[in-house]
Every structure is written in C-alpha cells, then in structure tokens.
Length: 426
Image 1: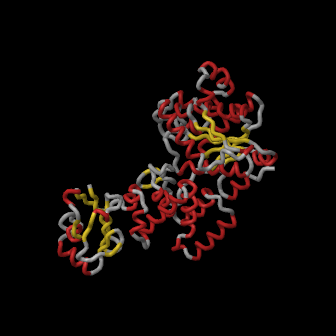
Image 2: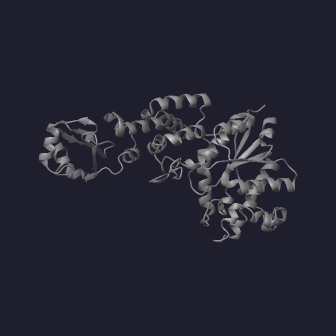
Image 3: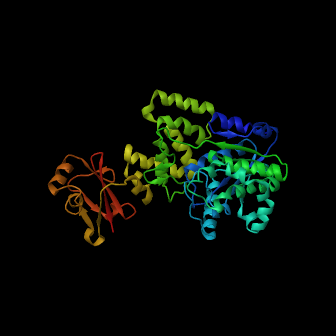
C-alpha cells in the first residue's frame, strides 16, 4: 500500500486546492500522476522547485510520477497568471530547452527504480500529427465556451484582450491529462494554484469523453513574508543552471532568507522529517544569530541541485566574505564564483608587459592601480600590517610575481577586513 501522499503535503503546507475524493483514491492503490513543466527557458528556476518537490513526495509515497515537458504547449503559451501574451518559441529553441529541463529533473526523480520509476513525456509526441479538425472534433465539442469563459485565467484577460491561441490553451492542457489518463493510467494532475482552472478542465474532459477517474491537487504560490516575489533577487531569477546562477549565489539565496520565511522553506524544499525540522527550529530559536535554520536549508538544497563539491565551494566563498579563509579557499573557487563573491569590488587591469617579472606591493596598491591614494598611504597601511595578498598578510618589501595570480589571471588585495581590490592580469 502507498504512503499517505496528501497527509505529507498537508503538514508541509503544500496544498492549496484538492478535489474531493483525492486522498481516498491515492490511499487505495499505487497510482500514476503528473506535473507539466513549460520549457520557455533552457533552465528551471527555484520557482519550479515546489512542483519538483511535489513529484518527489509523490514518488516517495510509492506512486509513479510523470514529468510532462510541454514541447507543444510551449508553442502556444499559457495565459495563467500572465498580464499579456508572451512571445512564442520556435521548434529548435523549444527542443533545446526541453533537453536541458529533462537533465535537471533527473537530479531529483529516480528514473530507474522499478514499477514507480519516474517517466518523462513530451506532449509534442501526441500533438505533432493531430490536425486542427481532429482537435475541434475530438476535444473542442466536449467543453462549452461558457465553461472556458468562466475560468479566472480567461476572465482576468478579457478587458485587455487575449488571442484565440491562448484562449484554447486550457483545452490543450486538458487533452494532455486525457491522453495520459488513457495511455499512462494517470489519475491525478498536480500543479501550482494558478493552474487549477486548466487542471479541472482536464478532469472534466476525462469525465465527459471516457467516464474515467481523475483528480487534482494544487500547491500554494510561494510568497516571501515581506511581500516581495519568491525566487527573485536584484540580479533576477535564481536558476538551477550553475551557468546562470552560480552555486555560491544559489547557496546565498537560501542562506539569506528571513526567519519568517525559513520555517516555510524548510518544509517545502527539503525532505527533512517533521521531528528534524522542529528540532532545528528549537535550536534556531535559542541562537537565531547562528542562522541554523537557514544554513540547514541552504546546504540541503544546494547539494540536491549542484552536488557536494559545489556546496563546499559555496561555503568556501561565503567564508571568504564573512569568516576566516585562506589562499587555498580562494584558489578553490571557479573564476565565475570568484567574481560573484566580489561583485562590485574595485578592479584594475595590468598588462603582462607592464607587469614584467614582478611588481612591488606598493606599486600594486597605489601608482599602478589607484586602489590607495598614494605610495605614502600604501606604506602606512603595510607598516600597520593591514594589507593582505590573497588573504595572507604582507610587508613593505613584498613583491608580486605571476605565481600569485589565481588561475594566472587575478589577485585579491585587501586592506583590513572590509576593503578588497582585484588586480587582473591581461
């Protein structure tokens, strides 16, 4: 018998809407269900993690999860939660995005564990040969215009206008559910609360076309306690792709979450048990300045998305800024992570010809870079033991050589604990 999937979501605060009878149906037998992912970019972002974790819990409860990547629906565009119609993508771009999203989902779901192995499906496979006449005959006639107009995703857009393409989206998504119900025995569709209207169109289509069994569950849209949008930073979305958002930036996103948000995040985005979470919350309440809860979340999710090596790099990067660190910590960072850590730090470039074989620390701080106002200031700071090269203190007679450049490209110069400068060798 499967574990109680719905009860698991409930205590984690992950249920917004649920169709009557869903819990009873899932508790009776191992079932199949799915969530759709719209491939509008070549990476998922942290906003998708709620749905990914929902599928993870579904599989852990013993059920069979399907991840539908919308190669066809990506060509149409979902109006749900949108204020205007978005640009449609060409087939080549969509295929690239689908391939990238699939690789990311494989980090979370087990695609090789027997009967309840996860499966990836692409709705382009069943839509590519369907004609318009086939669609309006086999799908359109079962759902009335009145039913479609009553959906919030449609009503909210009527004043500003929406294309027939977007208006028909709920039928396309509804047919996905019908197809998977008939061919993969999926009895439940899961999604965000903004998808409720589209999902129940699918349950209605299944009921009317085949009289089959179909259920729906949606999760709440995550909002931060201060009212700002979850998953956004000053630099934009927080992506799962390390090329878009470095593991250090990813780690910092979670580590910097507020106390008010952390209790919510640790339930939704980790697999920790209720007892483990309550113990972490108790420890956090006793010493909130240690950020025990935030650290637990950041470590758990960074390992899941990027792996243990990336976590170690992220922690090393954090220590460089906020704790004790060494030259080895600096050298362990990728160039991308290094410059992510020191975003906004003053930089100066010196050519290899200008540098020669060595450069005095005084010239590196003053005349060659302007980091300090004069050679005199440089000497005073050096005498005060305030200057470090790659986190190691140096004196007035110190000479920089090319061996000091990390990756043969950059050096970190520091004055005291808070003033950093980057010297780049070109």
